[in-house]
Amino acid sequence: MEELVDRVVKMICYIQSYLWRLFLLISLSFIYSCNQDNSTTSTTTSQEDAEIVSSLIVPQFNADSAYFFIKKQVDCGPRVPGTSGHKQCEQLLTSYLERFSANLIIQKTDVKIYDGSKVPMRNFIAEFNPEKKNRIMLCAHWDTRPFADQDKTNRDQPIDGANDGASGVGVLLEIARQLSQNSPQVGIDIILFDVEDYGQPDNTGLAPRADSWCLGSQYWSKNLHKKNYFPLYGILLDMVGGKDATFTMEGNSMKFAPSVMKKVWNAAAQNGYSSNFHFEETNPIIDDHVYINKLAGIPCIDIVHYDHDTPSNFGKFWHTHNDNMDIIDKKVLKAVGQTLLEVIFKENA
Image 1 (spheres, rainbow, N blue to C red):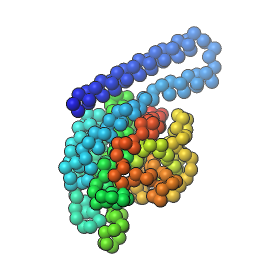
Image 2 (cartoon, helix red, strand yellow):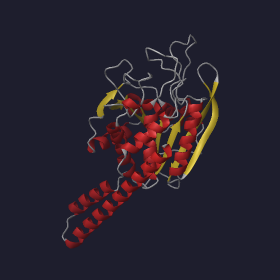
Image 3 (spheres, helix red, strand yellow):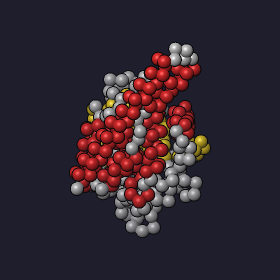
Image 4 (tube, rainbow, N blue to C red):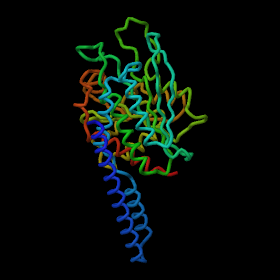
């Protein structure tokens, strides 16, 4: 049954891509013919035409496809490092990224968590247009929290992580699928970090351990997949699928990469997503982007769910068993995914 659903999704995506390319061809032909017929076309009109053409070349993000990719991860079970669900999802991500990207690199090692034990870590680096010097890095984490420490019941049990983990990966897998069919002017690297969510909980009785979160991005930042790797900038996605999610201008992002933050938020506003992307600076948080900035020196921002009405500011389902497919909102996935496509397809080489 899953194989049949997978085939149907692929067929739908192929038809959508074909119709989009046909529309683009017809539109470009119309613009060209109009300019040929009017020899007195002004410079202003030519610029307007160029802007129209630019908008036409940006692919349309498919939220249904992103939702499908999220569900496929959740169906693996909790993706806690060292478990069968983690191994199954590793195989799933390998299959998708090998299919979509020009080259896939997988960093494999063991990392030490807060209690001193070791767990397997797998970072995925998928390259698109690997020959391009100017590159953009898109990233998310794919593991899930080993315990629901913010829940009232079953706090020692792992969570589904539909939003916290799978949503960012789902958006990036759909972008990867788009990149396999449409090539931007710059190179793109999609990086999926592991062991982000194994940070020390409050009730362990152990002495607090610094930097116990984001172990995959810490490892990558100290062991770059390519020598002298330095993209133009990076964009991290974390919890980008929750119902009615809003994204503010997170403090560390504004500290390390304010111009990138404004570029992305302006792109969202220009495409009608201001209800999701708020021009409001909020408190800094510790996430993968902090280590990318501090250890690798790469300017990187974080698109992360912000909720004014919860103590954590991450939404009431954060690190609870309510972080499941029921809270995933396709409209939010569309807002985030389309904004990213606008940014990368309008970036000049």
